[in-house]
Image 1 (cartoon, rainbow, N blue to C red):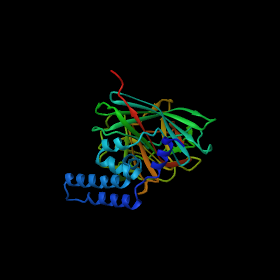
Image 2 (spheres, helix red, strand yellow; image 1 turned 45 degrees about the vertical axis):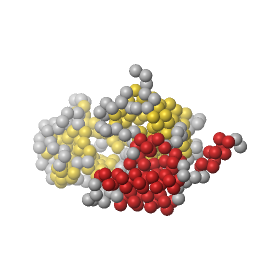
Image 3 (spheres, one colour; image 1 turned 90 degrees about the vertical axis):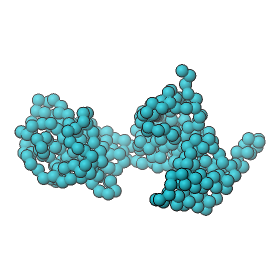
Image 4 (cartoon, rainbow, N blue to C red; image 1 turned 120 degrees about the vertical axis):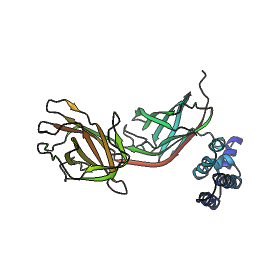
Length: 348
């Protein structure tokens, strides 16, 4: 065994005492009680983080422990990244994640990540990071991210993604160590396109009852002329007017409110179950919704309601048709995958 291997194995055995980590986290929470100044909380947090590092003996290894890393990052992102050891691959829950390449250009970072199923049984070419990824980099104005599935190798059960992360305020990425993490993976994605919503639209109520709910999601192409920040008058459910074969999606109400056509759908949330519905006029043309609004159906968020609102005058809709594009997944893999790598800004 050479010196490098022996040194690594000795350091792998170094870890903070569990009681020390728990005590530190308790002290962190205590410093966040109302009535104390931000400066006092920060000083106490720094002291607590320092206690963990001192107790660990090897700061770089301490920072590699998730609880310690999160504590350090909350206090000082730069300090947390300084102590974080470079580690371009990691394994958890039977899945290996590895950074293939990474690149930064001004305010945009591009990262190629490979995920490999070590069991060889769960990946099928539909792997999804479930929007659970993040690049640990302190930025003042927030970030936007986009994930693209680049390829899947069935022989090795490896899936490659390109993740693009952009600083919204135009702040340029600086050189240094970056940590990229993923918490959840979805597999078994199934898409059903053009499913007929077989429901009668011949007798649509002109003044159906409504009930208000806080809006937790909305979509529109142009700013709607209604206030979506307050409670919104959703249609009151009228029963199951249509349901998908798997029972996960349903049409629950149709009616005209304030001169607009409203169509209400529900979905069992499951593993990112979602749908998009298209309304076709009698002549076959597509009628785009003016906006959509949604709310959860229960405190746990296990199902949700989404309402499509169309700028269509009241009248006979018997010649209209609705289809749905339905998407479901059947497997959720949870874990803590983190890779840390060095990056330098691209030359101008």
